[in-house]
Image (cartoon, rainbow, N blue to C red):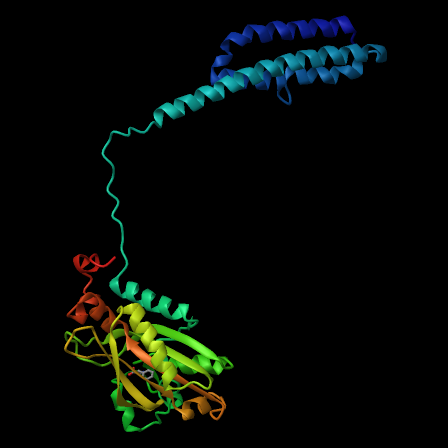
Length: 336
Ligand code: PHE
């Protein structure tokens, strides 16, 4: 058993020790030592509470009050110095992190978009505004999607028109984006309204206008009642948006196994002497619609394929298709 005066003595001792320590508390380490010694889990004040059980029951109320008082006092001292400590630390950090605004800045090189990306995005956005979705397909294709489904049977001489890189017996690097039409139609019930941008490959010898790797955008619209007039209208809007007002347009006959009739589309700038060929197009051949399971009596539609490089060359007056892949920053930076 212990008595209240004895407890009081212990508390007074603690208070004296504590007050003696106060002047040192502005040092960070001393503050932590103080916390551990007085108010830590095994600290001296916490220890006092354990003595309560040894007091006479009627003294416990007063004892609790005294112990809590000294505890609040110690905690108050700790908190006050802790806050000051933190404020000081922050002040030190702020002054060491200070930025000298008068120093010269670091040069950040700003990237820019490749002219092909710019033109591709512009063409996409023109057709997206007209309600076409963007679809993509694989660059490594099967003969079925690249030829057969597009009404070009094996051994048909038309296959020679696409100078194709083969990979093994039945796979190839797609020489045009038309196989994407087939893939989308297989998965969709009409109406279909898509554009398919993508990379294509052909066994061409590289020169100013040919590259073994190039890009096309395919367009396909299938619905009931579409005619060549609708194709012409879509192209007129496109030409106006992409090249500007006043361009004339001309269709000349052509042949593609997957369109009937097939046309070559030419445009002429206002006041220019020459026509420029911009794309192959036509009404989708009923055989192609039948191949994907569509009712060719009910649905009609049209498609075209244009070369993105060619559009970029016309738009920016670029004369050599090889510039696009030459990776010369001086060239690329001119367009953004
Ligand atoms: N796929 C054809 C080509 O690359 C272009 C084309 C697409 C023609 C769609 C007509 C319709 O040569």
